[in-house]
Amino acid sequence: MDETPIVPKQQGVEFGIFTGEGIYENVVDKAPIIDGLLNEVDNLIISAVAGTGKSILALQLLFSLTTGKPFLDTLPINGPKKVLFVQTEGDRAETLHRITRMRNALELNDDNWAHYNAIGIPLNTAEGLGEFMRHISISKMRFDVAIIDPLYATIKGSINDDAVAGEWQRSIRIMRSRLPNLALILFHHESSKISYDTKGRRIEKGADDIMGTSMWGAWATANYKMHLREDGIRVFLAGKGDGYGRTGQGVSEMHLRLIEPNPLYFVPDDTNLTDTETLIKNKIFDSLGEKFTRKQLEIYAGKSKATVCRALVQLLKQEKITKMDEEGVVYYIKKTYTAST
Image (cartoon, rainbow, N blue to C red; front, side, top):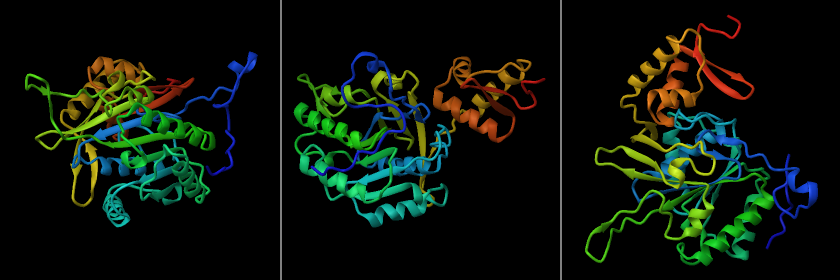
């Protein structure tokens, strides 16, 4: 395999053997990348059947990550990130055409990403991993996030075989020894085939069912499935840990509408959003300068994190509320209220 030089971490050490006091020192601190969706070194899997719009969603993640703009105008991003976009099917012309249409509504920073159009690269082999590392070393970019769309073309063998999944995941550990803190977002083609039990009853796969093997479920920090409803709304539904993954702070469900053909991008479905905005605004305004965390507002409104985040973004844009940071905790307050009054 190619001996690509290891990039030193800015802080913390992830791989190696640790003894004595060293066991508790230099621990990698996983900073958030997309609030509620992705942290450093996370493994996020997004599955959808063909035609649902997952490749558009993958590109929309690219737009937000490279600019630091909130994903779906809802989930804050912790500053612009360097992104490796790995395309394993389709052609460059189609992808660039989509990007051109999306640019009519969204911003993309071309200095912060590299497009790796892979013919098909088995990362679960030494040869495939070596070729992958050689290609991405050409960019000289230290990547924060790698988006792979779709996953299957990077695997030699059956994707639902435990041994194959294990080998692929070991390759990722090797990759991360050279690309510290790298977070992965994997897009997976979910089978559209319907399965039936011995009595002929349809078997419905839950959102936590990932590619037919426990190896993927154990490895993923969080996973989501995107379903297309009859009314055209895409339901972005969490699986592992009901959307909270291992962090306990994830998004459990989002409803999206696709704007097309030009511009081409997803927006949150704003059904009942105005009601949520009004409810939150009244709570903040009627509380005589009291400040609230987002979590407190979620509980009060009885709405999902994504809906409350979206409502807060709109209220901030309207300059009806403002936010303040106290010792790393973000609070929302009435615009005319300040900590000194």
